[in-house]
Image (cartoon, rainbow, N blue to C red; front, side, top):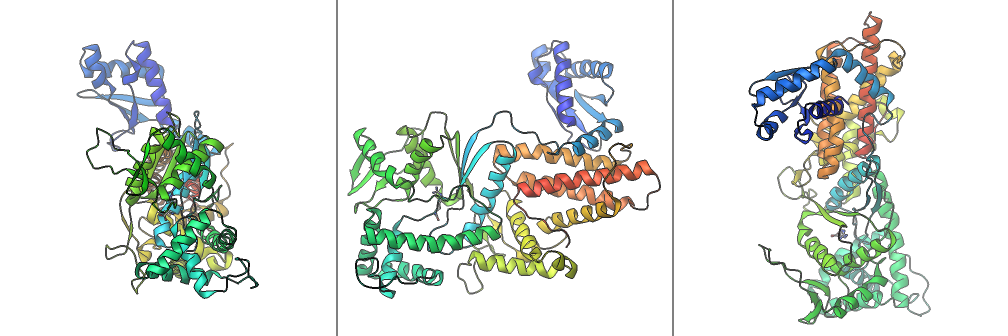
Length: 574
Ligand code: ARG
Protein backbone atom coordinates (compact mmCIF):
# COMPACT_ATOMS: atom_id res chain seq x y z
CA UNK A 1 0.00 0.00 0.00
CA UNK A 2 1.53 3.26 -1.17
CA UNK A 3 0.02 5.37 1.58
CA UNK A 4 1.75 3.26 4.21
CA UNK A 5 5.10 3.33 2.40
CA UNK A 6 4.92 7.09 1.98
CA UNK A 7 3.97 7.56 5.58
CA UNK A 8 6.83 5.40 6.84
CA UNK A 9 9.39 6.99 4.55
CA UNK A 10 8.33 10.51 5.41
CA UNK A 11 8.48 9.77 9.11
CA UNK A 12 12.01 8.39 8.65
CA UNK A 13 12.97 11.62 6.92
CA UNK A 14 11.47 13.66 9.74
CA UNK A 15 13.62 11.72 12.20
CA UNK A 16 16.70 12.40 10.11
CA UNK A 17 15.89 16.10 10.06
CA UNK A 18 15.18 15.97 13.78
CA UNK A 19 11.54 16.99 13.31
CA UNK A 20 9.00 15.37 15.66
CA UNK A 21 7.66 12.53 13.53
CA UNK A 22 4.27 12.37 15.23
CA UNK A 23 3.27 15.49 13.29
CA UNK A 24 3.76 13.63 10.02
CA UNK A 25 0.89 11.82 8.43
CA UNK A 26 0.28 11.13 4.78
CA UNK A 27 -3.32 11.14 3.56
CA UNK A 28 -5.12 10.64 0.29
CA UNK A 29 -5.18 13.91 -1.61
CA UNK A 30 -8.30 15.99 -1.46
CA UNK A 31 -7.30 17.37 -4.84
CA UNK A 32 -6.84 14.14 -6.83
CA UNK A 33 -6.55 16.25 -9.96
CA UNK A 34 -3.27 17.69 -8.61
CA UNK A 35 -1.64 14.77 -6.84
CA UNK A 36 -2.48 11.42 -5.27
CA UNK A 37 -1.28 11.85 -1.70
CA UNK A 38 -0.54 14.76 0.56
CA UNK A 39 0.96 15.66 3.90
CA UNK A 40 -0.10 18.76 5.81
CA UNK A 41 2.32 18.12 8.65
CA UNK A 42 4.40 21.23 7.97
CA UNK A 43 1.72 23.40 9.55
CA UNK A 44 1.83 21.51 12.82
CA UNK A 45 5.63 21.41 12.74
CA UNK A 46 5.82 25.14 12.12
CA UNK A 47 4.48 25.85 15.60
CA UNK A 48 6.90 23.46 17.29
CA UNK A 49 9.96 24.37 15.24
CA UNK A 50 9.15 28.09 14.96
CA UNK A 51 9.87 28.06 11.26
CA UNK A 52 7.71 28.86 8.26
CA UNK A 53 5.62 25.91 7.02
CA UNK A 54 6.86 26.49 3.50
CA UNK A 55 10.48 26.05 4.61
CA UNK A 56 9.67 22.90 6.51
CA UNK A 57 7.75 21.38 3.61
CA UNK A 58 10.66 22.24 1.32
CA UNK A 59 13.18 20.55 3.64
CA UNK A 60 11.02 17.41 3.69
CA UNK A 61 10.56 17.48 -0.09
CA UNK A 62 14.29 17.95 -0.76
CA UNK A 63 15.24 15.07 1.49
CA UNK A 64 12.55 12.90 -0.07
CA UNK A 65 13.86 13.63 -3.57
CA UNK A 66 17.38 12.80 -2.42
CA UNK A 67 16.36 9.38 -1.13
CA UNK A 68 13.42 8.12 -3.14
CA UNK A 69 12.38 7.96 -6.74
CA UNK A 70 8.99 6.20 -6.54
CA UNK A 71 7.15 9.46 -6.01
CA UNK A 72 7.67 13.14 -6.72
CA UNK A 73 7.26 15.44 -3.72
CA UNK A 74 6.15 18.97 -4.49
CA UNK A 75 5.64 21.90 -2.20
CA UNK A 76 2.59 24.10 -2.63
CA UNK A 77 2.25 27.36 -0.69
CA UNK A 78 1.74 27.99 2.11
CA UNK A 79 3.22 24.61 3.12
CA UNK A 80 1.43 21.65 1.58
CA UNK A 81 3.44 18.68 0.49
CA UNK A 82 1.95 16.87 -2.51
CA UNK A 83 3.01 13.47 -3.78
CA UNK A 84 2.67 12.10 -7.29
CA UNK A 85 3.52 8.44 -7.58
CA UNK A 86 5.36 7.09 -10.61
CA UNK A 87 3.86 4.55 -12.97
CA UNK A 88 6.53 2.05 -11.92
CA UNK A 89 5.33 2.31 -8.34
CA UNK A 90 1.75 1.80 -9.52
CA UNK A 91 2.85 -1.26 -11.49
CA UNK A 92 4.52 -2.70 -8.39
CA UNK A 93 1.40 -1.95 -6.39
CA UNK A 94 -0.71 -3.86 -8.87
CA UNK A 95 1.60 -6.86 -8.57
CA UNK A 96 1.46 -6.62 -4.78
CA UNK A 97 -2.33 -6.67 -4.91
CA UNK A 98 -2.30 -9.78 -7.04
CA UNK A 99 0.26 -11.58 -4.91
CA UNK A 100 -1.56 -10.90 -1.66
CA UNK A 101 -4.41 -13.30 -0.84
CA UNK A 102 -5.86 -10.58 1.44
CA UNK A 103 -5.72 -7.91 -1.29
CA UNK A 104 -3.70 -5.53 0.84
CA UNK A 105 -5.91 -5.68 3.93
CA UNK A 106 -3.64 -6.52 6.84
CA UNK A 107 -4.60 -8.57 9.85
CA UNK A 108 -4.60 -6.67 13.10
CA UNK A 109 -1.53 -6.98 15.29
CA UNK A 110 -3.67 -6.44 18.38
CA UNK A 111 -6.49 -8.97 18.17
CA UNK A 112 -9.43 -8.33 20.48
CA UNK A 113 -11.89 -10.82 21.84
CA UNK A 114 -15.27 -9.50 20.74
CA UNK A 115 -18.83 -10.72 21.31
CA UNK A 116 -21.27 -9.41 18.73
CA UNK A 117 -24.84 -9.65 20.02
CA UNK A 118 -27.15 -9.35 17.02
CA UNK A 119 -30.26 -10.76 15.44
CA UNK A 120 -32.20 -10.90 18.71
CA UNK A 121 -35.40 -12.48 17.34
CA UNK A 122 -38.16 -13.58 19.67
CA UNK A 123 -39.43 -17.13 19.94
CA UNK A 124 -42.93 -17.74 18.63
CA UNK A 125 -43.07 -14.40 16.88
CA UNK A 126 -42.26 -14.52 13.19
CA UNK A 127 -39.20 -12.60 12.11
CA UNK A 128 -40.23 -9.36 10.51
CA UNK A 129 -38.67 -6.44 8.74
CA UNK A 130 -37.68 -4.91 12.09
CA UNK A 131 -35.27 -7.79 12.61
CA UNK A 132 -33.62 -7.26 9.29
CA UNK A 133 -31.18 -4.52 10.14
CA UNK A 134 -29.73 -6.16 13.22
CA UNK A 135 -29.08 -9.32 11.23
CA UNK A 136 -27.64 -7.55 8.21
CA UNK A 137 -25.48 -5.01 10.03
CA UNK A 138 -24.44 -7.46 12.75
CA UNK A 139 -23.41 -10.10 10.25
CA UNK A 140 -21.32 -7.61 8.27
CA UNK A 141 -19.60 -6.31 11.40
CA UNK A 142 -18.94 -9.81 12.68
CA UNK A 143 -17.44 -10.88 9.35
CA UNK A 144 -15.32 -7.75 9.24
CA UNK A 145 -13.94 -8.49 12.72
CA UNK A 146 -13.19 -12.08 11.74
CA UNK A 147 -11.47 -10.97 8.55
CA UNK A 148 -9.32 -8.47 10.42
CA UNK A 149 -8.15 -11.27 12.70
CA UNK A 150 -10.13 -10.58 15.86
CA UNK A 151 -11.44 -13.42 17.97
CA UNK A 152 -15.18 -13.05 17.46
CA UNK A 153 -18.28 -14.77 18.80
CA UNK A 154 -21.62 -13.93 17.19
CA UNK A 155 -24.50 -14.57 19.58
CA UNK A 156 -28.13 -14.42 18.46
CA UNK A 157 -29.48 -13.73 21.97
CA UNK A 158 -32.95 -15.14 21.35
CA UNK A 159 -35.89 -13.59 23.15
CA UNK A 160 -37.06 -16.86 24.65
CA UNK A 161 -37.77 -16.13 28.30
CA UNK A 162 -39.88 -13.06 28.74
CA UNK A 163 -43.58 -12.42 29.19
CA UNK A 164 -44.26 -13.31 25.57
CA UNK A 165 -43.58 -16.94 26.45
CA UNK A 166 -46.30 -16.84 29.08
CA UNK A 167 -48.68 -15.32 26.55
CA UNK A 168 -47.96 -18.09 24.07
CA UNK A 169 -48.48 -20.77 26.70
CA UNK A 170 -51.78 -19.21 27.82
CA UNK A 171 -52.84 -18.96 24.18
CA UNK A 172 -51.90 -22.57 23.47
CA UNK A 173 -53.90 -23.73 26.49
CA UNK A 174 -57.06 -22.43 24.85
CA UNK A 175 -56.51 -24.22 21.57
CA UNK A 176 -54.88 -27.48 22.52
CA UNK A 177 -55.28 -30.20 25.03
CA UNK A 178 -52.04 -29.72 26.95
CA UNK A 179 -52.62 -32.47 29.47
CA UNK A 180 -49.68 -34.39 28.00
CA UNK A 181 -47.46 -31.78 29.60
CA UNK A 182 -49.37 -31.51 32.82
CA UNK A 183 -49.63 -35.06 34.04
CA UNK A 184 -52.83 -35.98 32.20
CA UNK A 185 -53.61 -38.73 29.74
CA UNK A 186 -53.60 -36.69 26.54
CA UNK A 187 -51.15 -37.38 23.76
CA UNK A 188 -48.55 -34.89 22.70
CA UNK A 189 -50.25 -32.09 20.74
CA UNK A 190 -48.84 -31.22 17.36
CA UNK A 191 -48.14 -27.55 17.54
CA UNK A 192 -47.03 -26.18 14.20
CA UNK A 193 -45.26 -23.03 13.29
CA UNK A 194 -48.47 -21.66 11.87
CA UNK A 195 -50.19 -22.20 15.19
CA UNK A 196 -47.45 -20.28 16.92
CA UNK A 197 -47.58 -17.48 14.39
CA UNK A 198 -51.31 -17.11 14.93
CA UNK A 199 -51.30 -17.48 18.66
CA UNK A 200 -48.85 -14.80 19.70
CA UNK A 201 -50.63 -11.79 18.17
CA UNK A 202 -53.96 -13.12 19.36
CA UNK A 203 -52.70 -13.67 22.91
CA UNK A 204 -50.96 -10.33 23.00
CA UNK A 205 -54.12 -8.47 21.94
CA UNK A 206 -56.26 -10.46 24.31
CA UNK A 207 -54.06 -9.79 27.34
CA UNK A 208 -54.69 -6.09 26.85
CA UNK A 209 -58.45 -6.49 27.26
CA UNK A 210 -58.95 -9.63 29.25
CA UNK A 211 -57.76 -9.38 32.83
CA UNK A 212 -58.20 -13.07 33.54
CA UNK A 213 -56.23 -14.10 30.48
CA UNK A 214 -53.49 -11.68 31.40
CA UNK A 215 -53.25 -13.21 34.86
CA UNK A 216 -52.99 -16.68 33.33
CA UNK A 217 -50.18 -15.54 31.06
CA UNK A 218 -48.33 -13.94 33.96
CA UNK A 219 -48.73 -17.07 35.98
CA UNK A 220 -47.41 -19.19 33.12
CA UNK A 221 -44.38 -16.90 32.76
CA UNK A 222 -43.69 -17.19 36.46
CA UNK A 223 -44.00 -20.97 36.45
CA UNK A 224 -41.83 -21.31 33.38
CA UNK A 225 -39.15 -19.14 34.91
CA UNK A 226 -39.27 -21.38 37.96
CA UNK A 227 -38.69 -24.37 35.71
CA UNK A 228 -41.98 -26.09 36.57
CA UNK A 229 -41.85 -29.34 34.68
CA UNK A 230 -44.82 -29.20 32.29
CA UNK A 231 -44.30 -25.54 31.49
CA UNK A 232 -40.65 -26.06 30.88
CA UNK A 233 -41.21 -29.05 28.56
CA UNK A 234 -43.88 -27.26 26.60
CA UNK A 235 -41.58 -24.28 26.30
CA UNK A 236 -38.75 -26.50 25.01
CA UNK A 237 -41.00 -27.88 22.30
CA UNK A 238 -42.22 -24.43 21.30
CA UNK A 239 -38.62 -23.22 21.12
CA UNK A 240 -37.55 -26.17 18.96
CA UNK A 241 -40.31 -25.51 16.40
CA UNK A 242 -39.69 -21.80 16.34
CA UNK A 243 -35.88 -22.02 16.20
CA UNK A 244 -35.99 -24.44 13.27
CA UNK A 245 -37.90 -21.79 11.34
CA UNK A 246 -35.71 -18.91 12.49
CA UNK A 247 -32.68 -20.88 11.28
CA UNK A 248 -34.21 -21.16 7.83
CA UNK A 249 -34.87 -17.44 7.61
CA UNK A 250 -31.36 -16.50 8.63
CA UNK A 251 -29.85 -19.09 6.30
CA UNK A 252 -31.67 -17.56 3.35
CA UNK A 253 -30.17 -14.22 4.37
CA UNK A 254 -26.70 -15.78 4.61
CA UNK A 255 -26.52 -14.93 8.30
CA UNK A 256 -24.82 -17.37 10.69
CA UNK A 257 -24.38 -17.35 14.45
CA UNK A 258 -21.72 -19.04 16.56
CA UNK A 259 -23.96 -19.14 19.59
CA UNK A 260 -27.68 -19.77 19.66
CA UNK A 261 -28.03 -18.66 23.24
CA UNK A 262 -31.09 -16.91 24.51
CA UNK A 263 -32.35 -14.91 27.43
CA UNK A 264 -33.05 -18.26 29.07
CA UNK A 265 -29.42 -19.42 28.81
CA UNK A 266 -28.23 -17.12 31.57
CA UNK A 267 -31.08 -18.08 33.88
CA UNK A 268 -28.94 -19.68 36.56
CA UNK A 269 -26.94 -16.48 36.91
CA UNK A 270 -29.89 -14.18 37.48
CA UNK A 271 -30.82 -14.79 41.10
CA UNK A 272 -27.29 -15.03 42.53
CA UNK A 273 -26.44 -11.85 40.64
CA UNK A 274 -29.44 -9.99 42.01
CA UNK A 275 -28.73 -11.28 45.50
CA UNK A 276 -25.21 -9.92 45.27
CA UNK A 277 -26.62 -6.51 44.27
CA UNK A 278 -28.86 -6.56 47.34
CA UNK A 279 -25.99 -7.65 49.56
CA UNK A 280 -23.86 -4.79 48.33
CA UNK A 281 -26.70 -2.47 49.23
CA UNK A 282 -27.07 -1.31 45.64
CA UNK A 283 -30.53 -2.66 44.83
CA UNK A 284 -33.67 -1.62 46.67
CA UNK A 285 -37.44 -2.04 46.58
CA UNK A 286 -39.50 0.59 44.90
CA UNK A 287 -43.25 0.23 44.39
CA UNK A 288 -42.87 -3.49 44.83
CA UNK A 289 -40.15 -3.86 42.19
CA UNK A 290 -36.44 -4.27 42.79
CA UNK A 291 -34.46 -1.41 41.26
CA UNK A 292 -31.02 0.19 41.23
CA UNK A 293 -30.02 3.80 40.71
CA UNK A 294 -27.79 4.35 37.73
CA UNK A 295 -27.99 8.13 37.40
CA UNK A 296 -24.72 10.06 37.46
CA UNK A 297 -24.04 13.62 38.51
CA UNK A 298 -23.02 14.66 35.04
CA UNK A 299 -26.27 13.46 33.46
CA UNK A 300 -28.05 16.07 31.45
CA UNK A 301 -31.06 13.92 30.76
CA UNK A 302 -33.17 12.07 33.30
CA UNK A 303 -31.82 8.57 33.96
CA UNK A 304 -34.46 6.42 35.63
CA UNK A 305 -33.39 3.56 37.92
CA UNK A 306 -32.94 0.20 36.23
CA UNK A 307 -35.65 -2.37 37.08
CA UNK A 308 -34.18 -5.73 38.03
CA UNK A 309 -37.24 -7.67 39.12
CA UNK A 310 -40.93 -7.01 38.78
CA UNK A 311 -43.31 -6.95 41.70
CA UNK A 312 -44.62 -10.42 40.73
CA UNK A 313 -41.08 -11.78 40.85
CA UNK A 314 -40.80 -12.20 37.08
CA UNK A 315 -37.47 -11.55 35.48
CA UNK A 316 -37.21 -8.88 32.89
CA UNK A 317 -35.23 -7.76 29.92
CA UNK A 318 -32.63 -5.83 31.92
CA UNK A 319 -31.85 -8.67 34.30
CA UNK A 320 -31.41 -11.19 31.50
CA UNK A 321 -29.06 -8.79 29.71
CA UNK A 322 -27.08 -8.29 32.92
CA UNK A 323 -26.91 -12.00 33.70
CA UNK A 324 -25.82 -12.62 30.12
CA UNK A 325 -22.92 -10.29 30.79
CA UNK A 326 -22.02 -12.37 33.85
CA UNK A 327 -22.19 -15.51 31.75
CA UNK A 328 -20.12 -14.04 28.93
CA UNK A 329 -17.46 -12.85 31.35
CA UNK A 330 -17.31 -16.31 32.86
CA UNK A 331 -17.34 -18.34 29.66
CA UNK A 332 -15.68 -16.04 27.12
CA UNK A 333 -14.12 -13.11 29.00
CA UNK A 334 -14.40 -10.75 26.02
CA UNK A 335 -12.54 -7.46 25.65
CA UNK A 336 -15.55 -5.96 23.90
CA UNK A 337 -19.28 -6.62 23.70
CA UNK A 338 -21.17 -5.03 20.85
CA UNK A 339 -24.97 -4.91 20.85
CA UNK A 340 -26.34 -4.37 17.36
CA UNK A 341 -29.84 -3.30 18.37
CA UNK A 342 -32.42 -0.71 17.32
CA UNK A 343 -31.59 2.84 18.41
CA UNK A 344 -34.85 2.98 20.37
CA UNK A 345 -33.29 0.68 22.96
CA UNK A 346 -30.56 3.22 23.74
CA UNK A 347 -31.78 3.96 27.26
CA UNK A 348 -32.02 0.26 28.10
CA UNK A 349 -28.39 -0.34 27.16
CA UNK A 350 -27.17 2.79 28.90
CA UNK A 351 -28.83 1.54 32.10
CA UNK A 352 -27.51 -2.01 31.67
CA UNK A 353 -23.94 -0.85 31.00
CA UNK A 354 -23.95 1.52 33.95
CA UNK A 355 -25.32 -1.15 36.23
CA UNK A 356 -22.72 -3.67 35.02
CA UNK A 357 -19.92 -1.19 35.74
CA UNK A 358 -21.27 -0.07 39.05
CA UNK A 359 -21.62 -3.63 40.30
CA UNK A 360 -18.33 -4.81 38.88
CA UNK A 361 -19.79 -7.42 36.53
CA UNK A 362 -17.15 -6.47 33.97
CA UNK A 363 -13.50 -5.57 34.19
CA UNK A 364 -12.52 -1.95 34.18
CA UNK A 365 -11.34 -2.12 30.59
CA UNK A 366 -14.14 -4.30 29.20
CA UNK A 367 -15.84 -2.31 26.50
CA UNK A 368 -19.63 -2.51 26.23
CA UNK A 369 -21.15 -0.77 23.32
CA UNK A 370 -24.59 -0.28 21.86
CA UNK A 371 -24.24 -0.22 18.07
CA UNK A 372 -27.59 1.37 17.22
CA UNK A 373 -29.44 1.66 13.93
CA UNK A 374 -32.47 3.54 12.64
CA UNK A 375 -35.78 2.19 11.38
CA UNK A 376 -36.65 0.73 8.01
CA UNK A 377 -39.09 3.06 6.29
CA UNK A 378 -41.25 2.57 3.22
CA UNK A 379 -41.09 4.89 0.23
CA UNK A 380 -43.73 7.00 2.00
CA UNK A 381 -41.20 7.77 4.73
CA UNK A 382 -43.18 5.86 7.39
CA UNK A 383 -42.12 2.57 9.01
CA UNK A 384 -42.25 -0.15 6.37
CA UNK A 385 -45.54 -2.08 6.27
CA UNK A 386 -47.32 -4.51 4.00
CA UNK A 387 -49.83 -3.10 1.54
CA UNK A 388 -52.55 -3.94 4.03
CA UNK A 389 -50.73 -1.98 6.71
CA UNK A 390 -49.46 -4.98 8.71
CA UNK A 391 -45.88 -5.83 9.61
CA UNK A 392 -44.18 -7.73 6.86
CA UNK A 393 -42.72 -11.10 7.72
CA UNK A 394 -39.10 -11.56 6.82
CA UNK A 395 -40.00 -14.58 4.69
CA UNK A 396 -42.43 -12.55 2.59
CA UNK A 397 -39.92 -9.81 2.27
CA UNK A 398 -37.21 -12.17 1.04
CA UNK A 399 -39.69 -13.71 -1.41
CA UNK A 400 -40.60 -10.25 -2.67
CA UNK A 401 -37.04 -9.11 -3.28
CA UNK A 402 -36.00 -12.47 -4.75
CA UNK A 403 -38.88 -12.17 -7.15
CA UNK A 404 -37.93 -8.63 -8.12
CA UNK A 405 -34.28 -9.64 -8.57
CA UNK A 406 -35.25 -12.70 -10.60
CA UNK A 407 -37.09 -10.51 -13.11
CA UNK A 408 -33.87 -8.63 -13.81
CA UNK A 409 -31.84 -11.78 -14.43
CA UNK A 410 -31.28 -13.43 -17.79
CA UNK A 411 -32.53 -16.94 -18.47
CA UNK A 412 -28.95 -18.12 -18.72
CA UNK A 413 -28.15 -16.73 -15.30
CA UNK A 414 -31.13 -18.49 -13.74
CA UNK A 415 -30.16 -21.72 -15.47
CA UNK A 416 -26.55 -21.53 -14.24
CA UNK A 417 -27.57 -21.00 -10.65
CA UNK A 418 -31.12 -21.95 -9.70
CA UNK A 419 -30.67 -20.00 -6.46
CA UNK A 420 -29.51 -16.86 -8.27
CA UNK A 421 -32.68 -14.82 -7.69
CA UNK A 422 -32.50 -15.25 -3.91
CA UNK A 423 -28.77 -14.56 -3.84
CA UNK A 424 -29.02 -11.40 -5.93
CA UNK A 425 -32.17 -10.29 -4.12
CA UNK A 426 -30.69 -10.72 -0.66
CA UNK A 427 -27.39 -9.13 -1.65
CA UNK A 428 -29.29 -6.17 -3.09
CA UNK A 429 -31.31 -5.92 0.10
CA UNK A 430 -28.22 -6.07 2.25
CA UNK A 431 -26.36 -3.47 0.24
CA UNK A 432 -29.40 -1.16 0.31
CA UNK A 433 -29.27 -1.33 4.09
CA UNK A 434 -25.51 -1.31 4.64
CA UNK A 435 -24.74 1.57 2.31
CA UNK A 436 -26.74 3.92 4.54
CA UNK A 437 -25.08 5.14 7.66
CA UNK A 438 -26.67 2.78 10.18
CA UNK A 439 -27.56 5.62 12.54
CA UNK A 440 -30.09 6.93 10.05
CA UNK A 441 -33.45 5.53 9.08
CA UNK A 442 -33.45 4.17 5.57
CA UNK A 443 -35.97 3.83 2.83
CA UNK A 444 -36.73 0.30 1.82
CA UNK A 445 -37.22 0.52 -1.91
CA UNK A 446 -37.16 -2.89 -3.59
CA UNK A 447 -37.44 -1.52 -7.12
CA UNK A 448 -34.41 0.67 -6.59
CA UNK A 449 -32.35 -1.99 -4.81
CA UNK A 450 -32.43 -4.45 -7.71
CA UNK A 451 -31.50 -1.98 -10.45
CA UNK A 452 -28.27 -2.81 -12.24
CA UNK A 453 -27.20 0.80 -12.35
CA UNK A 454 -26.99 3.22 -9.49
CA UNK A 455 -25.52 2.69 -6.06
CA UNK A 456 -26.93 -0.81 -5.64
CA UNK A 457 -25.86 -4.29 -4.69
CA UNK A 458 -26.90 -5.53 -8.12
CA UNK A 459 -24.50 -3.06 -9.72
CA UNK A 460 -21.61 -4.44 -7.68
CA UNK A 461 -22.56 -8.03 -8.38
CA UNK A 462 -22.86 -7.20 -12.04
CA UNK A 463 -19.42 -5.59 -12.10
CA UNK A 464 -18.00 -8.77 -10.66
CA UNK A 465 -19.82 -10.89 -13.25
CA UNK A 466 -18.34 -8.66 -15.94
CA UNK A 467 -14.82 -9.12 -14.57
CA UNK A 468 -15.21 -12.86 -14.25
CA UNK A 469 -16.52 -13.27 -17.76
CA UNK A 470 -13.63 -11.17 -19.08
CA UNK A 471 -11.16 -13.40 -17.23
CA UNK A 472 -12.92 -16.50 -18.51
CA UNK A 473 -12.27 -15.27 -22.05
CA UNK A 474 -8.86 -13.67 -21.59
CA UNK A 475 -7.38 -16.12 -19.10
CA UNK A 476 -5.57 -15.21 -15.89
CA UNK A 477 -2.86 -12.50 -16.02
CA UNK A 478 0.74 -13.59 -16.46
CA UNK A 479 2.52 -12.30 -13.38
CA UNK A 480 5.89 -13.42 -14.73
CA UNK A 481 5.49 -11.20 -17.79
CA UNK A 482 5.77 -7.43 -17.81
CA UNK A 483 3.09 -5.32 -16.18
CA UNK A 484 3.13 -1.61 -16.85
CA UNK A 485 0.55 0.84 -15.60
CA UNK A 486 0.48 3.75 -18.00
CA UNK A 487 -2.70 5.84 -18.03
CA UNK A 488 -5.15 7.76 -15.94
CA UNK A 489 -7.99 5.24 -15.87
CA UNK A 490 -5.63 2.52 -14.64
CA UNK A 491 -4.21 4.79 -11.95
CA UNK A 492 -7.72 5.79 -10.90
CA UNK A 493 -8.66 2.16 -10.40
CA UNK A 494 -5.55 1.54 -8.31
CA UNK A 495 -6.27 4.61 -6.18
CA UNK A 496 -9.82 3.41 -5.53
CA UNK A 497 -8.46 0.00 -4.60
CA UNK A 498 -6.23 1.58 -1.97
CA UNK A 499 -9.09 3.70 -0.69
CA UNK A 500 -11.21 0.59 -0.31
CA UNK A 501 -8.44 -1.16 1.62
CA UNK A 502 -8.28 1.84 3.96
CA UNK A 503 -12.06 1.66 4.36
CA UNK A 504 -11.76 -1.71 6.11
CA UNK A 505 -10.06 0.03 9.03
CA UNK A 506 -12.54 2.90 9.05
CA UNK A 507 -15.50 0.52 8.98
CA UNK A 508 -14.07 -1.34 11.95
CA UNK A 509 -13.24 1.78 13.97
CA UNK A 510 -16.62 3.40 13.43
CA UNK A 511 -18.56 0.14 13.24
CA UNK A 512 -19.96 1.43 9.99
CA UNK A 513 -20.12 -1.05 7.10
CA UNK A 514 -21.16 1.90 4.92
CA UNK A 515 -17.46 2.75 4.50
CA UNK A 516 -16.95 -0.58 2.73
CA UNK A 517 -20.08 -0.11 0.61
CA UNK A 518 -19.01 3.36 -0.52
CA UNK A 519 -15.47 2.18 -1.22
CA UNK A 520 -16.66 -0.83 -3.22
CA UNK A 521 -19.05 1.34 -5.18
CA UNK A 522 -16.35 3.90 -6.04
CA UNK A 523 -14.05 1.09 -7.11
CA UNK A 524 -16.73 -0.46 -9.32
CA UNK A 525 -17.31 2.93 -10.93
CA UNK A 526 -13.63 3.49 -11.61
CA UNK A 527 -13.33 -0.02 -12.98
CA UNK A 528 -16.29 0.43 -15.31
CA UNK A 529 -14.82 3.68 -16.66
CA UNK A 530 -11.54 1.86 -17.29
CA UNK A 531 -13.39 -1.06 -18.86
CA UNK A 532 -15.36 1.24 -21.13
CA UNK A 533 -12.29 3.08 -22.40
CA UNK A 534 -9.98 0.09 -22.90
CA UNK A 535 -10.73 -2.58 -25.46
CA UNK A 536 -9.04 -5.33 -23.54
CA UNK A 537 -9.74 -8.38 -25.68
CA UNK A 538 -8.68 -6.78 -28.96
CA UNK A 539 -5.56 -5.00 -27.62
CA UNK A 540 -2.53 -5.89 -29.76
CA UNK A 541 0.23 -4.77 -27.38
CA UNK A 542 0.90 -7.78 -25.11
CA UNK A 543 2.18 -5.69 -22.18
CA UNK A 544 -0.84 -3.43 -22.21
CA UNK A 545 -3.19 -6.36 -22.52
CA UNK A 546 -1.51 -8.27 -19.71
CA UNK A 547 -1.60 -5.19 -17.49
CA UNK A 548 -5.30 -4.69 -18.11
CA UNK A 549 -6.12 -8.29 -17.40
CA UNK A 550 -4.03 -8.09 -14.24
CA UNK A 551 -5.84 -4.95 -13.18
CA UNK A 552 -9.23 -6.55 -13.81
CA UNK A 553 -8.26 -9.64 -11.83
CA UNK A 554 -7.03 -7.53 -8.92
CA UNK A 555 -10.27 -5.54 -8.84
CA UNK A 556 -12.25 -8.78 -9.02
CA UNK A 557 -10.37 -10.22 -6.05
CA UNK A 558 -10.83 -7.15 -3.90
CA UNK A 559 -14.50 -6.72 -4.83
CA UNK A 560 -15.29 -10.35 -4.13
CA UNK A 561 -13.46 -10.23 -0.81
CA UNK A 562 -15.36 -7.09 0.20
CA UNK A 563 -18.75 -8.51 -0.78
CA UNK A 564 -17.95 -11.60 1.29
CA UNK A 565 -17.13 -9.44 4.27
CA UNK A 566 -20.43 -7.61 3.83
CA UNK A 567 -22.20 -10.98 3.79
CA UNK A 568 -23.32 -10.51 0.18
CA UNK A 569 -23.51 -13.66 -1.92
CA UNK A 570 -22.42 -13.45 -5.56
CA UNK A 571 -23.50 -15.24 -8.74
CA UNK A 572 -21.65 -16.47 -11.86
CA UNK A 573 -23.97 -14.70 -14.31
CA UNK A 574 -26.75 -12.11 -14.25
N1 ARG B 1 -35.30 -9.61 21.51
C1 ARG B 1 -35.10 -8.21 21.61
C2 ARG B 1 -36.20 -7.46 20.88
O1 ARG B 1 -36.85 -8.00 20.01
C3 ARG B 1 -33.78 -7.77 21.04
C4 ARG B 1 -32.58 -8.34 21.73
C5 ARG B 1 -31.38 -7.47 21.59
N2 ARG B 1 -30.21 -7.95 22.30
C6 ARG B 1 -30.03 -7.82 23.61
N3 ARG B 1 -28.96 -8.33 24.16
N4 ARG B 1 -30.89 -7.17 24.36
O2 ARG B 1 -36.40 -6.29 21.17
